[in-house]
Image: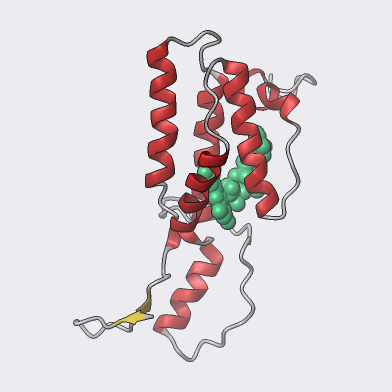
Length: 165
Ligand code: FAD
């Protein structure tokens, strides 16, 4: 469960992982580990506390940034990709699912990919596949689902009401 630090620092649990949790919860964990007097209170696993500017990402900030990259890649993917472009995108998604630095997110990602392999035959197909994948994560986290008919408004063209112009 816990490892002993040969340099005398307090033992840390194996699950201590900043990118597997959110900043507020993580910093509370650290206080509990290093200052035992700190009274533990109920942690909020999906706290929206922002990571301070210039600090390492937590699970929430990492997730937002990664979704931003993925949806933007899908937004600007080719309508008629070549075989190489399809192969590259499949490889990218496959590798990401193995190296994503949140262990249990990455495990679920790989499981989801087996059930729903990436669809990369066109911009429409890939952005819809990604939107549905993101929605499955949203459902798992108890969040509302995004309307996938609006994915290009959100990530490529800007909202029809002109609020992004
Ligand atoms: P996010 O979910 O990060 O979404 C960012 C923005 O994308 C939203 O503001 C919205 O405008 C837009 N959006 C939302 N849904 C969709 C959609 N379906 N299609 C298009 N656009 C959309 N966290 C965990 O706690 N457990 C996990 O197992 C986990 N797995 C993850 C797996 C992956 C591959 C990634 C990239 C992230 C994962 N996360 C996980 C992080 C989690 O999904 C969120 O990124 C994080 O909780 C922050 O959520 P958020 O509410 O800021 O919005």
